[in-house]
Image 1 (cartoon, rainbow, N blue to C red):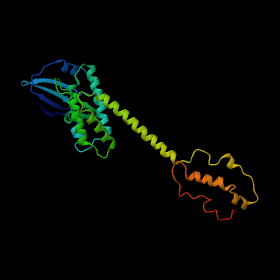
Image 2 (image 1 turned 120 degrees about the vertical axis):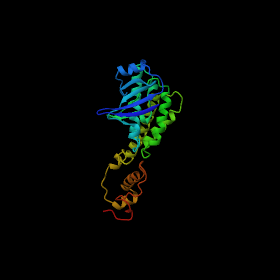
Image 3 (image 1 turned 90 degrees about the horizontal axis):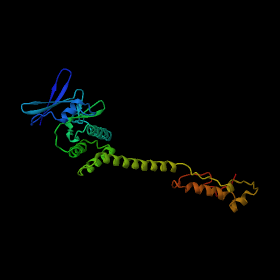
Image 4 (image 1 turned 180 degrees about the vertical axis):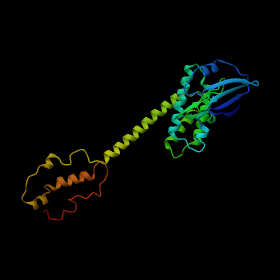
Length: 261
């Protein structure tokens, strides 16, 4: 297979030459007569006993060029995979075999915030095998500071090692796993936030709030009187469920040996 670009005044074309006789088959007819979402515009012809397929790539960048100096993040992979699944569904609606997609960085193009693919009629390589190769490319181009991206690329690469895998199911399982994981993280965050607040129960019981004036303060001190409920409240604060408050200074601390005012 030989490839090359042809630049004209207002158009750029990618040519792919295949060493086999050109044939006007069902696939090329459907591709030429229908605008299939996500596919590059294609034309085909025979030349010197070979087949030439041409794709319009004006204003687009190949994946190879996009990530030549940049790293791939989680959002980039999700954008690509979601677009690929859309294109596969569209191909099946037109009764075209998705194996015809060229899943190579050189033949996938980005523009208008989405991806476009080359479809090669008569291609034999399995789409599952081709996509697994792309997951290896993702791993090589990862942004290793993007933890979420690392997790996604790992899941894709591991899952696509299986024979005849279902990409849509892989992504559904991934989303379900992420929802559960983020739900657990959110729940943990809520718990942490609640632990920084005061306890919901009343700091004083009704019995503790009742106040009866007593003339003999010294007698109250000796018998415990109102000191015990207040100290009990302080102890409750110190032993509240958010942890130890050993450093909390209360107005009553250190006053056992002092006269009450």
